[in-house]
Length: 376
Image 1 (cartoon, rainbow, N blue to C red):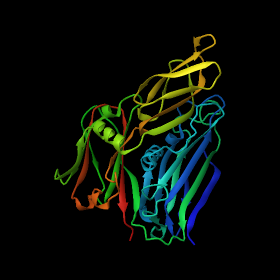
Image 2: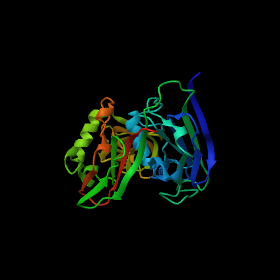
Image 3: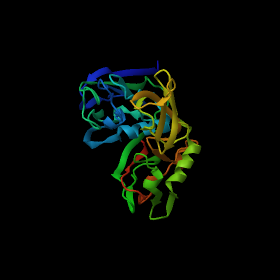
Image 4: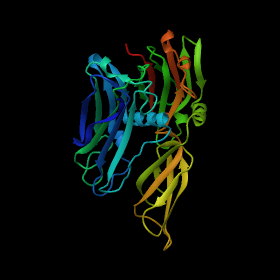
């Protein structure tokens, strides 16, 4: 009898503040998805602009002999989750003192959570492991008062397994790996060699510099196959963002708490935020978004009883909707409807390069390539 089995490999396990956790994959059967939750406690006073997605520096699925099936940063993993799920997984993100933060990831071997047409055949992976690397001091040194607390974190991992699956054999699995990353320069072209071993499902680009438009850091993208014989995309990043707005539903992101005074600016983690909203927590307060620029929201906060502007930091709730979670933009070959023939057949090309034209120095740029791999 077949059924979905939720194999809990870690149950809110206490883990070190800095380490690489290794968890074996099943030796047989199919693996559709992996659910990961990572949590840590803030120091007693506050923990400003310090997020677990930046502390989780690498999520990998590997096999013997250097075989890599997944290799992503925490930020890239959450960016892919939005495109997979067309929504943002539940997060608990707060700067409040002595409060817990928790962030989540879905590592999909199929096109979406619990896909059975595309899955990993674990019997064909030798010594398969999930590897998660983190450091609570990645952004700011741990502190019992003003950063992540100098204490253990918590990790939860669940494998989504179709137990005794009797359906058709999977057609393959989705391999997701960071292809290249760098810090942008003021001008010039950087070249990204795209893998050519398998059909390409999609290519994700991230260009992040706080308060700066991603379209300033990257002004044009050209995907060039066989020295110009195949050019699936040659246009500016803004045009790709506009296409994403047609392809993907709006993202909605909710931050539990940010500490502000009147006029402070905070990150909303959406490169193109459409509807920022601010909700006060303290009584007799009025809070509102007074401005939004490239994912940064300026917040107004007043005491309605006085009335005066708030000059000592207080927690408010910040939320918003828009596109470009973590400034991620997608070049897709799998929508609006999955068709294997319309995936980019990179394996048939002699060369495949992404020409990235830069326009502003200082942005964190990275590319993730997703391939459709048929296991033999």
